[in-house]
Length: 320
Image 1 (tube, rainbow, N blue to C red):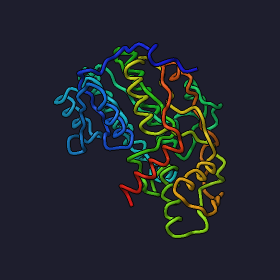
Image 2: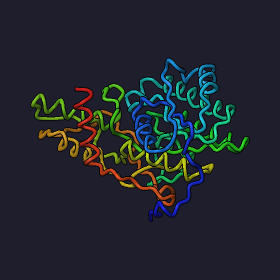
Image 3: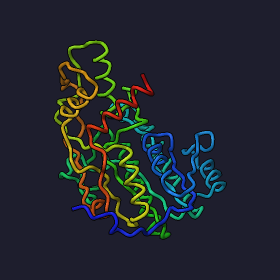
């Protein structure tokens, strides 16, 4: 049951604050910037020329200069199954460095509040469904993205450690699979929704009779629009202060094959969708329990079909 937002009292105000969105050019970061434009705050951003987040000295120099009071940390090296499986060293090193540098420097520069963005891949491959927050570290991870998951788990633990030792108001959120404007459409490194949109569009243009999807099509996944995720993060920054991370999701899932059919309809591809079982499926099911965030007065607003249509329109306008 969702608690009415009006009944949840804000415990932290963004009004008049200097708010840094680390990773503002990414899909989630850009969604956060859009969302924060509705708040009465000063939005801070840093390009790689301003500060390489994998370099501690550069992060410290920039944060000491700008002195953000609140920090959103979606900055990360991200990718789909193929990218994670191909570049495990980059996925663990870059993400460990980014989160360690920003979180530690937030502490030493006196940041009032920080929100770290994790990933649903932190949970065990065979976690009971829907996945509750307490499932963390209760079983083996999915091997294809283990290095990325370990880095994200470390980020959660960093926030918890600084809270325990120093009383820092650092919180973590775990979003489900995200999509939307600014997504990555490189088939070598993309997640499933942009990959399927690009494949369906190419098949439509080529007049292909078939479109092939990875695996059996049976894994079940949950999806959330990046603008909904950004809204949830701003909401949690205002109303939540606790050691446990908070799941951010829609609370419903569908199979990859069902997703491919919806995307084909949105794109206008009328051919056959063919499965390639030689390719990996990944985790069989990944649906996150949303009870905690619902109890905090938040729920998503963007329907999947409408969200996919807007994502396809962005793809047409920005990448084709």
